[in-house]
Length: 208
Image (cartoon, rainbow, N blue to C red; front, top):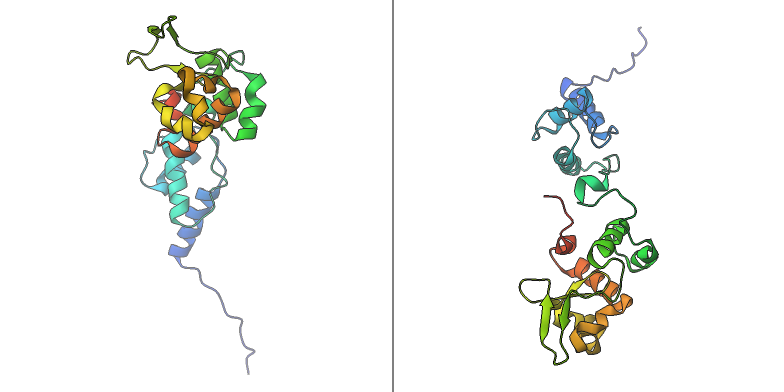
């Protein structure tokens, strides 16, 4: 009598292809990488141009594909800031003295807000881009619509009622003077990030 033979597990071609595709999706890539293996990834994703260039569109489609298969997205590379935000690499165009406060309040990315503060106010919490005469008549306004921006992150006067809600009624008196308090200014910037659909777009730093 012959001894029982062990069962042989047969993997179907479809299962093998599925496992291969999963491995391709879970491999590590570099943002900006140009290679044949990126082309293979793009073929596996299926709804992206196969050009071998791992850019913003491939990254987005890669994430969508992983999520559709309930796979983790931790292997997807983070793009450099220059790929998303229109900010210079020149570190002199930053406000490092305010970065700890941005971090404490939760304004992210900190480096982007550091640049915004430099560009908008020259790192000056008391900056305001309008002037008035002794009678309270506006004599100069940078903005064509005669609104004005105040403080470190140059919060626009169109936010008046919301600033009052966040920082108190006193903040909007005397031409939004409360926004010259850096804590109120940064606190309201955080409110914009949490509640405005435009988020960082309010400061026009996204690349088109």
